[in-house]
Image (tube, rainbow, N blue to C red; front, side):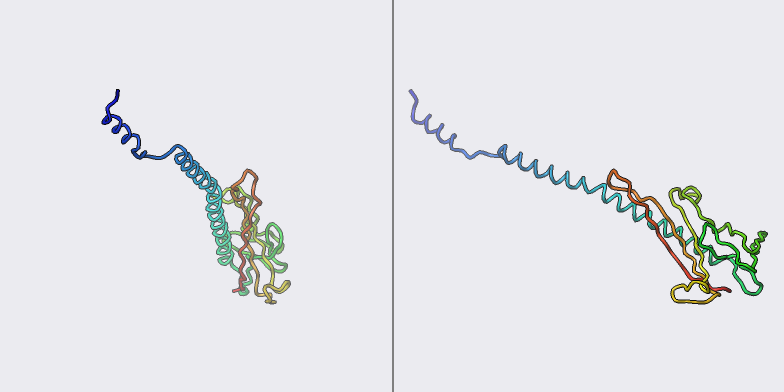
Length: 186
């Protein structure tokens, strides 16, 4: 029926090694790659929130420093007696008793509010919606400032509050950046 030659050829061909990957190897590799990609994708919201938080903190620090620079440029002199820096723990500092403030065309008497240091809500700072800013000015002669008790010194503290981005579906707690400086009377 069959010649020996034909049978040998069939045997040689049937013992040839198989080439390529098995189905189990392909499924295992696909599963490992899928797990790696899912893990990497789950990190993206956290990294995005961290970058955004850094950006918002830098912006808040800039806004606080901007107001401190404004406070440094406001006149507070002994000769002539001109106090436009004021003192106050409330929404706007006031001119101390027995003093007055002249800033350009603006004249404010003793006890008058200095509106340039009034609290600013989250819509009041032009170009920076979502950031609110408060300024508190303490007389170092009444309340010691970092160990300094001198009525010719004042502590200016600026706090900027913002709502950070959250990496989860729940809202993150508001963050506040506070920058302070002691200013001497000129």
